[in-house]
Image 1 (tube, rainbow, N blue to C red):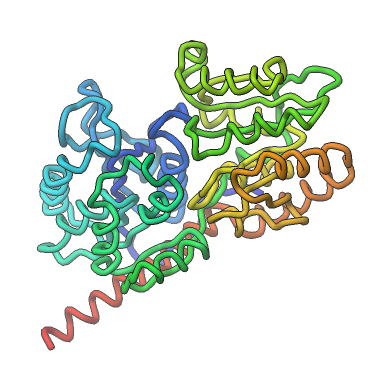
Image 2 (tube, one colour; image 1 turned 90 degrees about the vertical axis):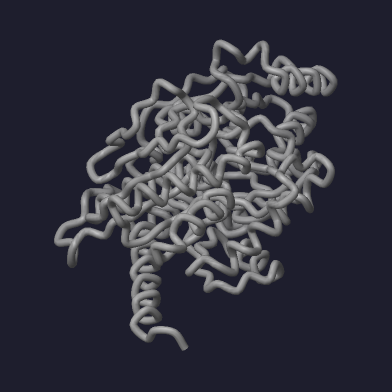
Amino acid sequence: MSQRPARGHPGPAMRIAMVSEHASPLVANLGGVDAGGQNVFVADLATALARRGAEVTVHTRRDDATLPNRVNMCPGVLVDHVSAGPPEPVSKDLLPPYMEEFAQRLRRSWVRRRPDVVHAHFWMSGRASLAAARLLELPVLQTFHALGVVKRRHQGAKDTSPPERIAEELEIGRSADRILATSSDELFELARLGVESPVSIIPCGVDLDVFQPAGPAAPRRQGLHRVVIVSRLVERKGVGNVISALAAVPDCELVVAGGPGPDLVESDAEVRRFRQLAREMRVEHRVHFVGALHHHQVPWLLRSADVVACVPWYEPFGMVALEATACGVPVVASAVGGLVDTIVDGVTGVHVPPRRPDEVALALRTLLRQPDLRASMGAAGLQRARLRYGWDAIAQATLTAYRAVCEERAGRLAEGPA
């Protein structure tokens, strides 16, 4: 399904300020500690909004002194590198002290060129955006991408989030003009948290021109089925659970993309930890780590898979699962978070409980021994991705939310103080 520029945009171009403090849309290699779905989400949504006539500026923190102040990412999308904190990579969990400076620079930028609407991505972006927009009376929409209360529930003492995160997210949820949740699960979590702002569910999208069944595929070893994981190499993503499951899935190799670049794979601490697990499970000869991939390489690997595994302990959305379905590949997915919406159990893939290698193994064996079932699930997933998740449709829904918020804000200002 082609995603061509829309024609006949109604009215003047909407000016949109996107704020994504740690996840730059220009990041090419995915799978690093802080590089993943949010980078892709922001890049693809901004591009799709521009195709519909919007003018988008993405504000992201400068993490390299050599970066230009502004980069034209594509027609209609400008990336603004905001100087806040040291111009070097900093873990996102250590960024809160720099958000006041980030907000001040956003405010100055918006005074010079006022946007119609602000769309913040992740909680620190929301904190900075609300602070910058308050005196300017700009409407702010928030996409959390992940909620601290969910992360704390699943990771406990291993959660490295700043201690103020949950309280800050609640305050954002009470102050933003609208929350854009990416799944029904997130909607329920926001309700439990006590969020008072209106909430709309607008899922992540997928680039249907890039992720499709037709095209080159990575080479395979003869005589073996292939399961693929594309993920950051952190414990909660469930990579270790799939490695453990492989012991009960004969004649199958596992290819894992993510982590450092290919040249640094062998020295990476997480790769070494997973390799040790593979040795303990006696499957080391069937587990291969290929390192981080450029986003345009991901479909090349996905098309080579019989099944894609996406079995995190929790997952706000799960873009890889959606990308796999758009390539016509069935998915074994944890029944958590956004994956409950994205993967239809028994139709486009199989749901399994999180942290259950035995259930992962059963699902993989079931699919790998039934090529007709894999084919039917792949076809159903492809159809669903094309009907529901193309970026042009997601962009249109997002623009509708923007306009509604702008109209609501204008109405309140016209009414004046109560």
